[in-house]
Image (cartoon, rainbow, N blue to C red; front, side):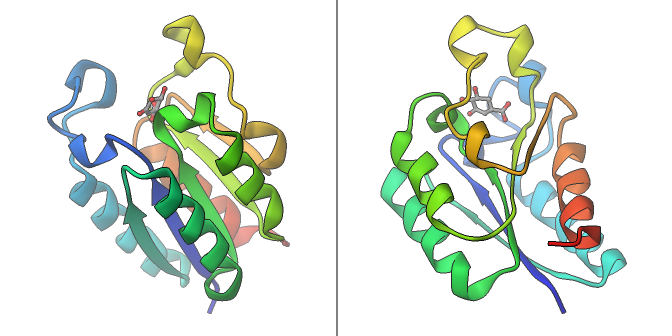
Length: 144
Ligand code: DHK
């Protein structure tokens, strides 16, 4: 059975409490439950991690080489400036899909640029938690 890792970066543990007009009312637990249900429907395995620490996110990306067939990542604000996370993604030979809950292009200018996008398979923005469902579906049904 294919196995996928969902990695959420800084402040995403605050989902549900954090700026609900931007990120919605659902919690990280709600997201993980949604992805667990989606994985059952898709007949794949999913595991989720969240960290507020860049190095822990990088370690998880590295470990995924041995543990997963693909990665879904929302690097939070690291999206916009972490060359270290970008390089970690580039170092693993796995399909990686970048997800953002909000439509970053409608927000502050610093959110318009992602330094990780050039090393990902694709990017989904602005579709709320459903973006993760779409990413998991794409990886589960993809050829890679
Ligand atoms: C989440 C964050 O924490 C922000 O720093 C990004 C992203 C946007 C999101 O929409 O999921 O700018």
